[in-house]
Amino acid sequence: MAETACASGRLAAVLLCVLVVVSRCCAGQTNLKSPQDIQVYAVNTNFTLMWNYTGDGTNVTFSAQYQCFDDLQTSEPEWKELSGCQNVSHTECDFSSAITAYYDTHHIRIRAERREAKSPWSSIFEMIPYEIAQIGPPEIALQSINGAIKINISPPEANQVRKMWLISVFFKYNVVIWDNSSNVEKVRSILPIDVINDLAPETTYCLKVQATVPLEDKGGLFSPIHCIKTTRKVNDLLCPTNVRVFALNMKFYLLWDNHYNEHVTYTVQYLTGYLKNLYDDYSSKWQKVSGCENITSMKCNLSSVIKPTSASYYFRVQAMNEYSKSCLSKDVEVDPPVTNEIGPPDVKVDISDVLLHIKITPPGGPGNKIMSDLYDFSYQILYWKNSSDNEEEVKMKETKQTIATVSDLAPSTLYCVKVQAFSEAYNKSSDFSREECIGTAGGKHLPLIILATFAGALTVVLIVASLVIFFLYQVYNKIKYMFFPSCQTPLNIEGFGAQLFSSPFVPTVEEPVEICYIIESRITEEVNQIDFKDNKHFKQSSRDSGNYSYDDNTSQSKGSEETLGNDIL
Image (cartoon, rainbow, N blue to C red; front, side):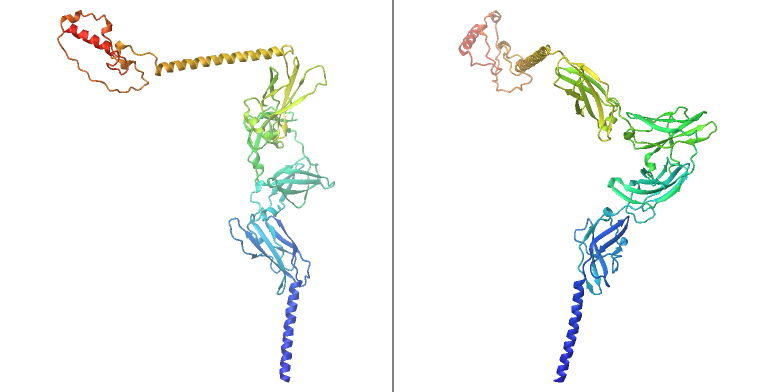
């Protein structure tokens, strides 16, 4: 009994220990909470997973899993371990090496772990890497030259093998610059290789640069701040100044000033705009403008280079004196549809009845169709009564057509019109055209004019209708005569060439014909004496079948035949 009791005690102790261990494990699993507030911070191709944990963090680690949904995949993908985020003790981890499909949808989940105990999975965080990624800061290099700062920008991810942003020419750059002593910031757009002018000499400037993708409305992080001191500026009188473009109705001229008193010649150079958006040195790619080489005037026609639908250009002027010393002006940009100014349209007016007709010729003339298509003009028409009353209301009418009419005109009144062209696409408008005026007819003659117009129109309609009816009647008679003639072939020529008189348009129908034989007999000379003048004894049948008929006038025919036979005998 004692041994049995001892064995029972031992078994109870073992069971108690097992229950304690199990209870502790269960208690540990219950106390582990799921991570919350999952976020992903992405810059270029660098991804960091972050979360919050409100439970007891003693000896707690975290592990994450992810799913990648390919567009071509039909079934749900399996969960995989997220590389870089396994058994981490902090509330963030870097998983950049695990993500390669930047345009596919990803699901991420995470849980807390303490030895064998594991919390439930967190809620799923969904992301498309390309959409949540920020553009990283660009790299910049500065150089001080003649009171200006030359800047050279390298795009984000320039030195990385894996790239989020594959086409660097889509980047546009903004620079924030300020005098280090005043901290007044100025923001302007800048090219990858550019020169910042209009700076104070021998002054320290600080700046930072941001890359953006305007097509996707993405803004990047600013670069680290760089500071540089400008040098003293040397003004060379030989250098052209105030370089500017005059453009009207797609005719472009480059103008400039020069204060050099001795003989000097000028050569205008241009550069296609897209070359400045690249990151290569473009200094050797400038070309000369035809007709503007070694000229002495300070004006150049750019029409040989600029086309209305072409992209932007950059122009500069090189001046050279008699000692072969040269100096280059600043660059000036020309974007044809933006730089161009719209001239006023031409207007002609006319009066008919009670309507004012307005004919508009688009800016640039009727032959400049490219300009009309490019700007898609609309027209604002102003018209008013030109009288001594200064309080007359000016009325407005808008149209996209080049022909417009105005009604409700007062008699014996002078109306004036002027027109302005505008383009909504480019937010541009022209000056108003010159005023055109025309007077309406007197009021007492207006009813007579209307009545005379109506009577004239009615007369024209009646004349035209009569001519049409007469023509149709003549055509009807011709057709009826041709296909359904009213007259018949004379009986005495019925058997001789009757086919010649039949209609060529009506097919002939072959009818049964009796076969006749002529029995020759000797005819005496008395036959010559027969009186054939009596036609009553020699009558042919009607033209029913085109052959001799013995049906009609039977009695008369038989009598004639008998008489003729007796005479012959």
